Length: 359
Image (cartoon, helix red, strand yellow):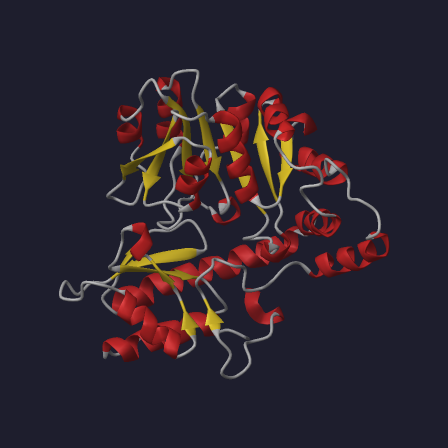
């Protein structure tokens, strides 16, 4: 099994399944790359991350002029908002979605217009209906956080075809490596075909580099040049660039990560459903679980009881989903621990039968 090479948590250690991190950690090649870089820390890093951008260009089959590195994809969200929005402009944001979308728009002095997606899947027709003459930017997570739902290729193409030329759509693909839905769109090819897209990706999730803060954007060369002009000099450090290059070249580690994640998603779907939760379909590395008992109006007391046992999951109250909790996939032992703790707190039998592991 994919987790076999990873050590289990020490007894009584906190099990953190709240932040969508990779429980396997980064590729072993990352540590070697960082070690090799240490002797040159008195030198400034490559301003544009030339080596990393060239590697990405070769892997993604894009021109390096269409790539921009960032201090995590979150920095590039902020840069996009500051570059593409002016005071008085509007940006459309589906809800629930990643909370910083609204924050970067507001910091740019623009107005964040939220559009509800009740089913969990982003409602593109509703977004299209909300477009006004002031709309300049649309921010979409695909897969969406916190629901794990994806936008399919056909609906996305139809949506883009309706938009006025002045609008740029940011597609946040932080979880793209976990997707196995055949209808998922190839947004990089859409960029190459002239779609008004900025595609953002992160090495914090599947590649396990959350602590180093490294991500990248793909867009038309003219758009990337505008964004680059608004970035800080040396916005990605030498260790992050070296680590990212090493991580991207270890496809075997990525495959183990994907396998472990799929096992975790499948297990949590079954085990949480057996406890009475409604589990939203997910193409990411987390599941959104909604309380099945209508008499329980809020999940936060349940989340607090889990925390007292050293088990951390994410509250959804700020997302407008007070009856939900988000659980990241972990090692199978961690997944089982959370399910068993939920069963104890809810006073329900835990009949889960997880697959055998070596962890």
